[in-house]
Length: 295
Image (cartoon, rainbow, N blue to C red; front, side, top):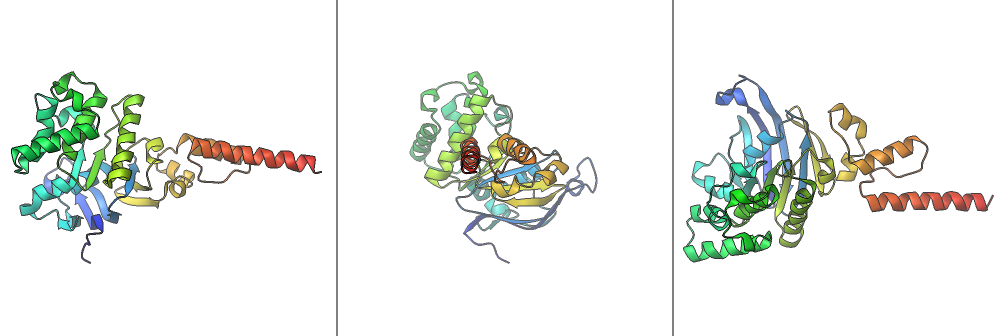
């Protein structure tokens, strides 16, 4: 099967063993036959417990690792093609958990310029992309600031700007909100939604936070190196028992709805949004009152 341009990410029977690369646990299989497709413009959340293979999978998409067997295509490019390595990394931009591991410039502007410069762009084009990327993440007034003096949330915005400046087709975020405070997390999630919905950038958000995962269009659950569940958030989080067996939580609204259903409340499954849950409760209570008045 040949990858098509419609799928910005496609993996075919991908396996990865750290032992094959001289890792600390010879023969340990981190990924075991992963075959999936992510279409251009999707917002996908990838969740799973520690050791499920999430980070390994992300690094394969950016060609930081190569599969032990199987094939990874990024916008139709085989990641094993060494001559197109920079093209793979331009299309699939990676944002890591700790922004300090990604920021190298002495100023914000210099840091964001690093990627475009390595693409061999003309200086004026690099400057244009840097200005535009900083504008899109709301960091233009910090262009001359030393990155190490910024808050964690703003550092992460700088990291994202550096990827945006390379004009990627896909943003891959590996626990990029994990070290941030709630306000900064919300800011990053709002930025990701805007980049996805308004600019069509594909987002793959790897997270432990189920509230964040519920905001995606699609949720992929990994367990023991395999895809355990894959579907819309309402479908995936309706499998609460299975998720708990894998050591995972479900969003708070889904948890509350499940408990209320267990107490006899007639609520639909798959509720993830607070407003939707409140509306469902109001409809149920209104129906109960109507039933009482008509008996």
